[in-house]
Amino acid sequence: MMVEKNGSARMIKSINPATLEVNAEIAATPLESVAGIVEQARKAQEKWARVPLEKRIELLQRAREYVISNIDEMARVITQDNGKTIFESMNAEIMAMLDTVEFVSKNASKILGDEPLKNAIFTLSGLKSRNVFEPAGVSCVISPWNFPFANAWQEIPMALAAGNSVVHKPAEITAWIGDLTRKIFEEIGAPEGLVSVVQGSGSKLGAEILKAGVDNVVFTGSVPVGKKLMAMCAETLTPVTLELGGKDPFIVMEDADVERAANGAVWSAFFNAGQVCASAERFYVQDKIADRFIDLVVKKTKSLRLGNGLDKETDMGPMISEEQLDIVDSHVKEAIAAGARALTGGKRWDGLPGFFYEPTVLVDVNHSISCMVEETFGPTMPIMRFSSEDEAVALANDTRFGLTASVWTRSRERAERMSERIKAGTVTANNHALTAGFAVCPWGGVKESGIGRVHSAHGLKAQTTIKNVTFHKPMSSKDLWWHPYSAEKFNGMKSLLHFQHAKGQGNRAVHLINTAKMFLKFLK
Image (cartoon, rainbow, N blue to C red; front, side, top):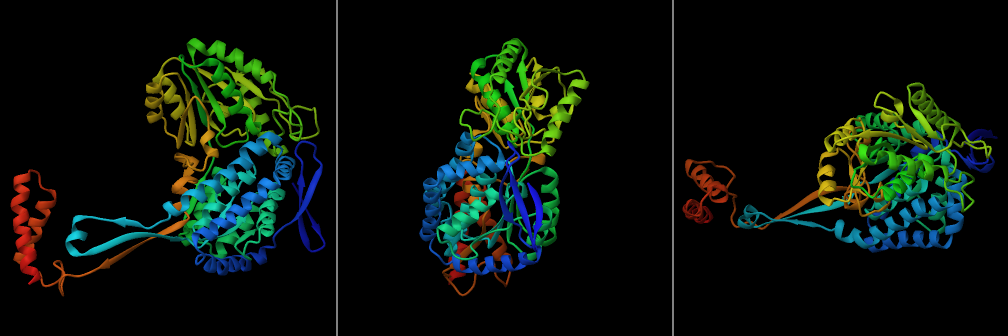
């Protein structure tokens, strides 16, 4: 990404991180126009909220049809702008978008439908109560550069189905992909202002969007930026959902299918060049199988083919930027200086001009080294050995993060037991992080990995406000709990509480009689 002036307009240049060639130029959004964009979104939302749900779904279905009809172009743009392989663009970005639209289309009516409430007092008093899920209003969706299409499209359909309008802020470094969203809604004839894409600096635009007054924020990105955003939202009590970083453990038990675990480890570490919040970044292997596991992952890592992601035979593309590459390089050099060994990789790759780093397997590491405690966000696989299940769980939990984790074992009982003890938003057995791509599964973390959940029924309801609506068909001119109070009312209320909550059928029967007498007298 490069930014330059073109007359009075500020232009964002999309740079292919594999070749360093310019892909496209995208106009940045002037800060002074943000307030107007949010106001237009608010007017669009007021109309959209009155559109029946089935009509909202029809718009999302048109978006899905457009993507399917232009799927090769979509995958090409994602790969050229972000660097990931064309297969990953298809599998992780486009598939996630299509799955989200499918999930929302099939389930929104049930999830967003009224929720009736019942209890004994309601029945006795003639009360009918329900919860209603209403649109939040204008939803701000801020998506990251590592999955710029998927993350945007895993949230926007949720917001639109709930009756919201959307102001979408893509990462500046993947502005070309962000412009795809603008193009899609333009091509399918979405109402003006329903989905607005603002381009440019995240900190400056984010501040302007919040200042203009949105009704909720969904942010996916780094922990430091997430904390700053949360502080800004606190000023106006704007609800915010944060899906932040991870330092996710990959635990291989002695009874695991070691061949499968090794295959999964290589994919989990080097998928999207390791630039995944849910990448496996810490590998813990039980002593008895550690040598075999390490031999396998080194052999498999050496066979990975680096290159331009547009080549369908490429296994791993470049990193997004020189800055990100430098972070990975510094973590590896620090580890080696501290006594770690790189069994393969450990340096930049110069086969193409772009930001490539060789997939790297490190051993002899520990929790005093950055590569085991800080988010590397790159193609590294640091491996530690452990002896017992308790030690593995302790190592997994020794982190300020808690997004996802995986346990590799043939024992369902052991997998369940360890999953209960590991502190993370998602724990998977014999696979890693795959549920992040499925809209039906909630996604989010604990500790510094975020607050709230995206995707699933939980993510859809997070795009709403809950209103309770209660209708009372009274049986008299006064309610029992209204004035005037009396000793008789007090005793009657006590009987009611005993009837509802006391132990013993006989005891409760006595209080039922007293309660009935009280109600009959009161209703006269």
